[in-house]
Image (cartoon, rainbow, N blue to C red; front, side):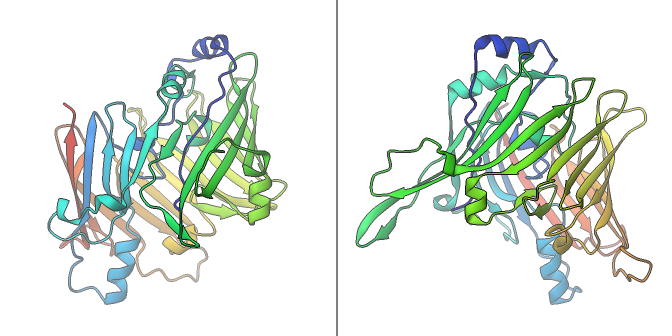
Length: 377
């Protein structure tokens, strides 16, 4: 079953929450609909999003068509349903070619549907931080996340009997006297049985721990990442910044900031080397991320022809150019630059994206993506 993000937040006391609110003016809640990892970047009161890729241009080879459909930086969920608090209620897979119609291609029996804990939502919505969120900065590990459980849609048969399945992530936070997170414990809970009663996390469900270290300005400078019992027993690796890495003893995330308190670099280090890195450049006069210099290893090398590349974004937070940096002087790149242009609706969400993935921004686009977006207002 697909890994879920269901989070349990231990509130030590209302005093801690109130104290934490005094430490900053920004909401310290990670909202998945603006997540860099899901690539949603949605503005305003979005209710439903339908996504499709039109057929690639005919002059491409079959292998190029297949590659561009999978790896184009725009490919997204075919279907999203979001409640009026901005929480994702339902989603369906990553989108490939979906033909001419949106709704006729949505199999609602296959969607992943979620239920949220209202008490958890209220508690975490009150948490404040000094860190302002910018898309597409990788700040998800610095923010609180919502409890979310999946609606069971199918059962399995074992020995002629019907068994149920239960799966969730649980994140347990501890805080210091100033309301700042000291440690995050991540539990991965899977249960299968005729009757599932025990859904509380146990020590053998512990996937990982993150130990927070702060600099003199009270900003998170380092997160040491430690494997839990579950990760060790299952032989799992750690994933972040588009890269997978083993749970080495020196595995950590490092954060660097500018004078305005904005994140300018995130580094994942482990096994004696840099495993992934992102460097952010902000627009000189407007407060948004203009460029991201990326370094990836592992799975990131599968979806990109080079380990290093530079992404350029517009003011709406959408990628408009991607430049690949050769790994060595001898590397001959078929395509060095990709380009993207958009059409927007009145909410500044794109509804059409022309992708030029063959090195030139002119002529017929390689692929065209479209979105149908419905709003609450």
